[in-house]
Image 1 (cartoon, rainbow, N blue to C red):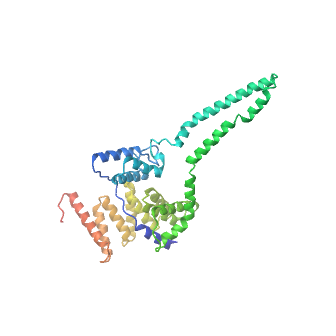
Image 2: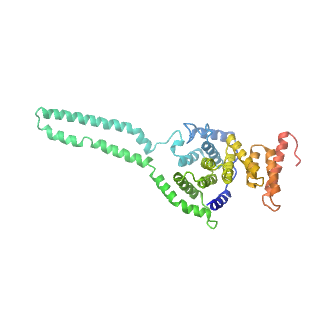
Image 3: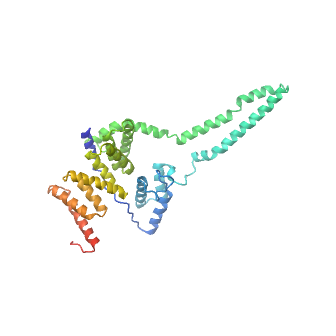
Length: 356
C-alpha cells in the first residue's frame, strides 16, 4: 500500500502549484470596488452570518481568491454569483431568489392557518349537529356521521402535498445518488490514478474519488495513508479546507511519518494564515535538520521563505539544493534565477543598488 501511495503522490504532485499569499491587484478603482462589494454580498458557508470579506476562515479565503480569479476572467456580477450558488447553494447569498421552495416556506404559515380554521369550523359544525341529534332531530344524524369521516381529509391532502414538495426541493436525493455512485466508483478510480498507462483523472473524477475516500474513512478513521491521499487530492483540486483537514488528521495519527509531515507542511505553507505559514516552516526545519539532503523539503521551505520575504533563508536553502543536485538537473536554472531574484530583493530592501 505504501508503494501505491507513493506512486499516487508522485502522480498528483505533478499538477500541484504553489499558492501565493492573498494580495490582489486591480486594473482600476472600479474593479476594486466591485470586488469589495461582491465579497461583502457573499456569505461564508462555514461562519455564523459573516460575509467572505469579514471572515478569515480557509473557505472564505478560497472564495475571495475565486471571486478575484473570475473577475480577472471577465465574469460579471451575476455570473460570479451563479458560480458560487451552483457550488454552495443559495445559502451563500444574503438575498435568495424567489423559488418554489421559498414560496412554499413563506406560504406554509397561511396554509396552516387555513387548515386550522377549516378543522375548527368543521368540528364546530359537527358539535351543532350532534346537539341537534341529542335534541331529537333524526335528520341531522346521517349528515353528522358523514362529516366525521371527511373532516380531516383536506388537512391530510395539504400536509401530504407540502411534505412531498419539501422533499422534492430539499431532500437531496440526487446528491445521495451521487454519493452512492462515488462510493462504488472509488476503487476503480484509485486503480486508474495509480496506473501510469491510464489517462489522468479529471477534476470531476478527482472529486468522486475524494468523496469515496471520505466515506471509507468514516468506516476506518485511523487509516493514515487514506487521510494522506485525501489531503493530496485536496491540494490538486485547490480545496484548501479538504487538504488542511485531511493532512491534519494524518499528522495527528502519525506525527513521525516523513511523508505525512512533508505534505502537512506543504499545505500549511500555502495558507494565507501567517500562523499556518509559521507552523509549516517549523515542520520543514525539523525535516531538514534530520536530513539535510531532503531536496523536496528544502524546495518547499525556500519558496515559502521567499513569499514571506525571508530572503536570506530562501537563498540559503536554494544554495544547499544547488550543492545536492547534479549539474545536468533541469531544476538548476530555475533555482539559480530564484537566487538572483532573492538577492535583488535583499538589495532593494537595504536600499542598495544590485550587482546586476
